[in-house]
Amino acid sequence: MVPARPLAADGGTSAKERGERECGGRDGGVSLIYRSQAHTLVKMPVKRYRRDQSEVSCCLKYVIFGFNVIFWLLGLSILAVGVWAWTEKDTFNNLSRLTNIALDPAFVLIVTGLITFTIGFTGCVGALRENTCLLACYAIFLAILLLLEMTAGILGFIFKDWIKSQATNGFQAFIVHYRDDPDQQNLIDWIQEKWLECCGIEGPKDWDRNIYFNCSSEAVGSREACGVPFSCCKQKADEIIKNKQCGYDVRKQDYQLDVSQIHDKGCLQAGEEWLERNLLFVAGVAVGIAFLQILGICFAQNLRADIYAQKAKWN
Image 1: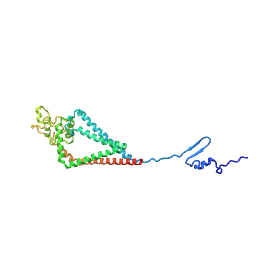
Image 2 (image 1 turned 30 degrees about the vertical axis):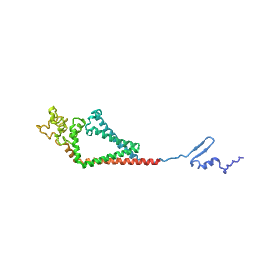
Image 3 (image 1 turned 90 degrees about the vertical axis):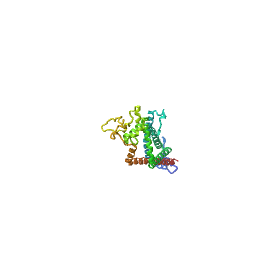
Image 4 (image 1 turned 120 degrees about the horizontal axis):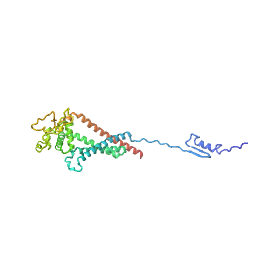
């Protein structure tokens, strides 16, 4: 006779079966507790967290970053060229040479490079590091620059005669110091030969202001007396290398000025004519620059707003 199986306290259900029923069965529960003489296996529930979406737009962030990296490197290059030019002229060791610093091309390059480098740096690092302080500085710098440009444009349109007078004085200073500063010499040669194709302010006679080209310098043996720089000469069609002595003696009384060989138009008149011919182009460039600056200000402000919204979620 087989002995009767003892019943459990709950009506014939073993502890193992009770555990499976309470926990949802062998495979349908949240956790499974299985006890045996060999081992105990415990399977706990795994919590899954959904990653919150960032409020900061990656597209906007890297557009600002990439755009300003270009300006950062451009400003650094311009600054390096200006410093190199001053080093070549030994300006750092002899600052007394800076008689008219505003007309020094190297100084203009240094100032332009510093401004471009600073704006590019604040925009680039501010966007990359999501730094609201640098982004605010970037927007302020662009706003100040835009305001100065608009002010200069309005004043230039209203005070045309004053601008013309200042341009005349500046060009006169270039002529006087033509041989004193190689940067000014290269700049005025480029204006006369490559850009405006002109000579002097109102004509070749303006070169009498320079001590080397003044007719009185003939008494002291100056070969350039009563002449003009080579940049006043027109390049011949079959000329490979321009004759650097083409402007000698062209203003002597016994010398007939050949307008087919020398530019007889002054640079002031040539500049006004060039501006009239290219007015739409100049206006388009100015509007384009202003549009990019306004766009940069708006992008920086939008990125700052996104960063503040993200910080608000953390708090």
